[in-house]
Length: 593
Image 1: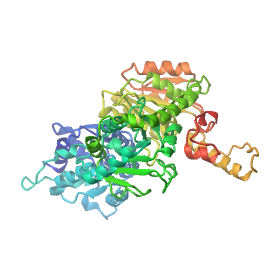
Image 2 (image 1 turned 135 degrees about the vertical axis):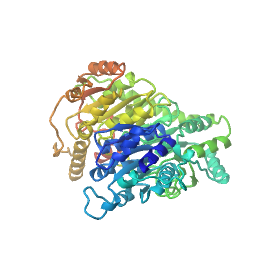
Image 3 (image 1 turned 90 degrees about the horizontal axis):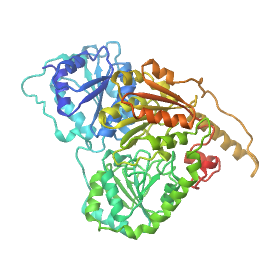
Image 4 (image 1 turned 120 degrees about the vertical axis):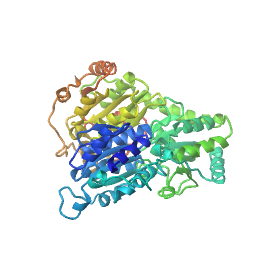
């Protein structure tokens, strides 16, 4: 058995059922082992290494299992950087196998030589180079242990080509795997009972408690526990973008989204008035706190923070009750200690929030049903709400669709998830990610939301979708520009002009946008090149007809929707609204802009 075969056998032992990758000069040994080893993981041929890692990322987010990708040396490794960085900062368990140049060529000017370990070390949880075939099993076990243990993250293994061809010694080497590391988190920790008791006492004493669930809650699979805890004590739940899905959007306690992008005014209002906030798996960074404005720093709001990493707790706010541990384990421990049926204590607080919530949806209703052309993005999302099969998995790029998906998409099933790569916000994620979503949950319909910029970066994976016949519904928000940046250019200019004008004076009209516009094309024709069923839609009736037909088909579908640019009407972004002098927490302010 050579190194490549041993590697493939161990991957199978860890429950890896699919590997995403791109062929190159240095991964022939791995491919031969994948082709000939009984029970080997299925290999998914991708068109770009960035896409391969994005597929593995989304697969891991939705399955809880480590996502595995493989790339060749040189440029292949370089193209893997964006996905590794995003997965690691988003606490996603991911393993990237870099099929590196042979060891004898190191330092001798070998084509595609890179210091892989040094390259990935700053952006991964661990980066390691295999130095001897005897060490391969140990290195693989360490990779899965690191990817799934503690705060999950991305691990990179550089595998020199010559070592994968070498025979593994028959003695003194074990190919055993660690079953706990097949899933993340592999080990669930919890704080001492005294810490739990102190935090629970404060929670029970609060009159206006609020739970803020972040991405760590989803990584921990804590949704069921958080919902049960909220229901027992009558605590409303808001989430960050990456925490969406922790509680159903139609739940009385599932209030909405906080943060800078796509927030709900009533959720922000609740955060500003809570007397105790329980942060679960949330870093409390710039987005979740609206640049550390809410809760008011050093204010009267008491804070409970639950996080796996001690260095995260108290990093940005003074924390009254730090609980170091896995989100699900901590919340389950609190449930075990909490008194039954305390929901009536906070009923008035929950009613106040829901009254504002209802007002928000009433104010937005005309815009969600608007027949304006070009279509408003929120109209597209509202139509999607009516047509989406439940449960389903929705994947959005970080650009144009994000503020509308986070604010207006309503997932009414506990299995349904919305995935957005938020830490670095790179474009080109959604199209490859729906492939990862499909392999993570083939029984759920994957839906992709993306704009023009993202399509231009990942259009090659349309061929992958067509070749594999992934039954994804792809929704392209076509506004012929880098809409997010175009909108920001206008916001910055409007803010500058407002500050320069006399109080009460009209702000002069100006278009400061530069180098953000594309040509206008029917992109459904691009999908048709690959044999993908395509629709070009420009009216509300066409959107609904196309979506209903698309969800009936068991094949990839591309819907090109001509939408109003988010630069033409200010999107629901907290910091941008403040820049133009609006009150972001005011119900209906967005509808007026």
